[in-house]
Amino acid sequence: MDQDTRWLTRYNEVIKFIEANKRNPSKHRIEEHDMLNWVKANRKLLNAGSLKAERVEPFQQLLGLIEKYKRLNQYI
Image (tube, rainbow, N blue to C red; front, side, top):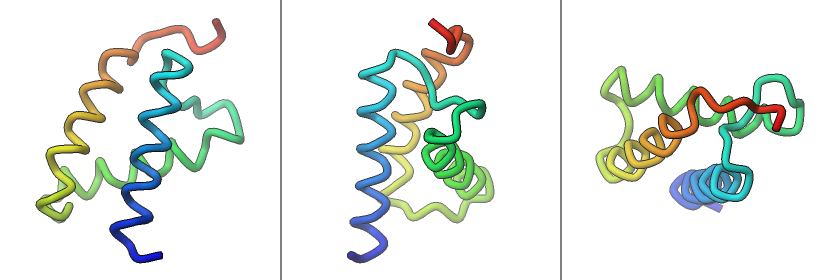
């Protein structure tokens, strides 16, 4: 599996999680740490300007979805 395929797999995993649970991945749940760390790492790359050009738009859409559920109580 190449890097682009892995990135897309993680991207889809996070999108499906947010849509299914109506909340963002929690830092308090061990099973969600991988998704949270992936989002944080890609956000750092985006802010540094080193995220690949073809990944910028989909990731910004993901950030928009994350912003929608930003302050939602995660213990519902």
